[in-house]
Length: 144
Image (cartoon, rainbow, N blue to C red):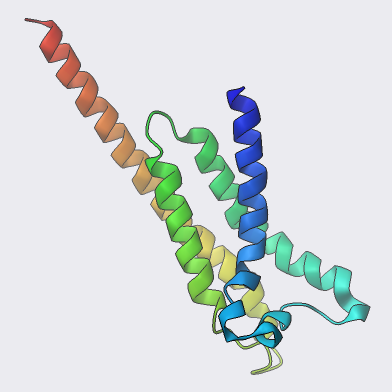
């Protein structure tokens, strides 16, 4: 039963991370969000470009789902960092600003994943510290 839940959470996280670049652009209008959609002639290749790179932070989020043990701290820190970084990088990024602006679509998910990786490691370090602290308290209490 737990595996089915984790698979469902993983699929949800994957869809969320791939839709978040579009959602973060909606406050500026539908035209601004449609900038990330390629024209009809390049639809498959354009969507493949955007979603293949935004799958990198999605995989990091899925890994945090499977590796969070007693506390959901690694998942929570990774989720919040990836969400904030994705929204921050995508909400005002103008693809029509220059001819090489599309390269940013490659580097933004990589930078986002790097920041998410730092949060992932920090979350695991804090989780390890909390678990170790609580087990030491339990061991000291059982000596009496």
